[in-house]
Image (cartoon, rainbow, N blue to C red; front, top):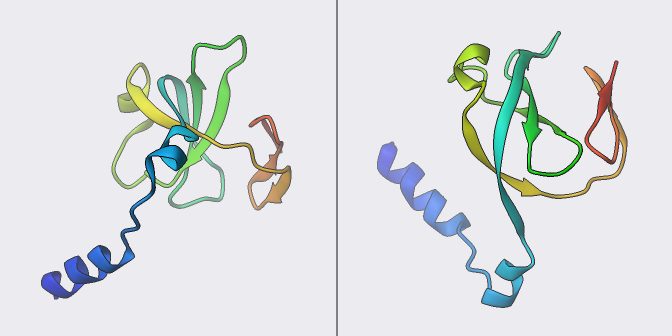
Length: 101
């Protein structure tokens, strides 16, 4: 079973060109606050400091692997991508990464 999964992953890998990689905005961020998301079994809400004036709000499906207190103060990598505003089950995520309930 494990071998099959590994083979499937290899098929899904896509090589990108160097020019495309340069377009990706990767940053190191410090986790300022981590909290549970009401009504979500897998999500944690992370408030990140990415070195700009405002913090970023991120939702990550990592609840099974980390505690909120264990994450605060740690560094992580963040791929910055601007998404359009959308309503989610646990709140309204705005384009700038803020969330309201």
